Image: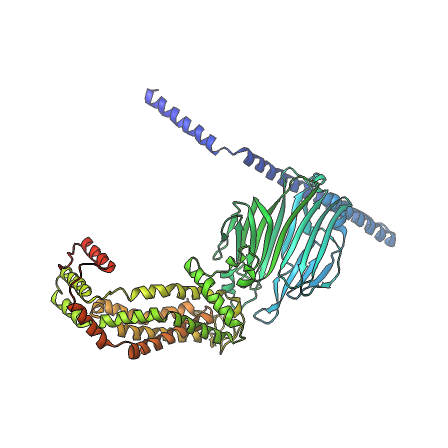
Length: 640
């Protein structure tokens, strides 16, 4: 073996050893793997034990039924079954076997806002109905039903894998009604003995969607396996179909969460996802299109073994999605443990969610950055103010549109004034184009000189449009997310929060990207866009917009409405109605400003006056930028 080969083998060996050391699991990871393996082994052992006990039951039943004394045999069989069931419960649940043998009971708790069905099995809320809302089919709005799972999970010291929703709690209340400012504490107890029990305390107010929920563990340090130092809260919700559009619901249904001290985030609604928690969790929300249920920790849930997941069953229309989370409650090993949280069960109403000062209102998608600020600072306050006058929401949208257009009218005026100046300069621009049609550099140089001499900024019309864009996009977010528009009708639209339909195609027929219906508000919006674009372009067209570019603009003038027709057909009719109104008002503003406020002869006279003024040596910011761009392209600025 030569020297180079020997050195190469040593290097390869060193790399392999280093890679192995780098990827070796930490002590915490080894411990977690061991706990997981132990848990699996315990579960498999329990399953084998149960299978053996079932086989023994079947064998004993067969022997009893063979005996000739029928009545005695049946009594014996019942006694044997009871005995074996007790043994099974003891084998499965250990010290909690007594709770497994109890019968399930249900309790109705009604407030001014909620109708809650509690079950002794798991001590949980089995069903929640929001009294102030109905589904699209005018049925009671069930936020979640009995298919929802909510339990604590832990191992006992004798390796029993306990899920609390398999056990029956004792309740200290019957069916009750709570009104106004009154509040009641409802207690469920999972008792092993007087000194050892798990206690759930629900504090419910008559006029609040938020329920205080406290978990107390008394004496459980002697029963619960404390080696992991954790208790697991499992929560699974099948979100019911409540609205007109199943697709819109699936797009909006998602899991939102907030790490302690961090911004609100979400799992991602457009596809099924699963993700582990990376830090201590302050709250988790199962958000539907217009409603949500959230768990808000008094302190935090631990990140250990926590995860969240969304799943969609395309084969069902009864449920929108299945939302799942596993949360970890830390245990300190004390005789008495307490963990407090709040349960929000209610609407995605911005003002209501904001009142809890937990950033819950951020689950409502109002847009990011400046678009969200426009909605929070301007649109929502004005909308809520107008809502106090008990007007139709179609009228409220009309008033809101007029107010926004009035606020933006100075910007609109500047836009049209800039267009008017460019129209006045059109003959001179045509002359420059013709004179330097074969020399782009000289043409650009001459244009710069003309703009400088007349004091016209060709970009001044674009800036006002950019200022208006945040409002347009903010409204695009506001209307589909606004629960105020839910099931509010106007003209032919029966629900402004979703699409209107004047014609539904036959069952099974759908136009790709368009849908299975015809939305009249979307049609009106598309037509108004076409007219507005045509009027606006005819007023602002200059020589710089002639030729191939002008032809492309004309083509886009007709393509854009068709694109919007496809895009908005299944969107909120309230939004289409708003854009339709905004376009009509813009058309009226255009005609009014042109006939009343803009005098092109006066503008022409002012431009001529500017030409005769002594040339200023001071350059405007626009001129400096224009000349800098020209220099970068190799164009010399015009000489003074």
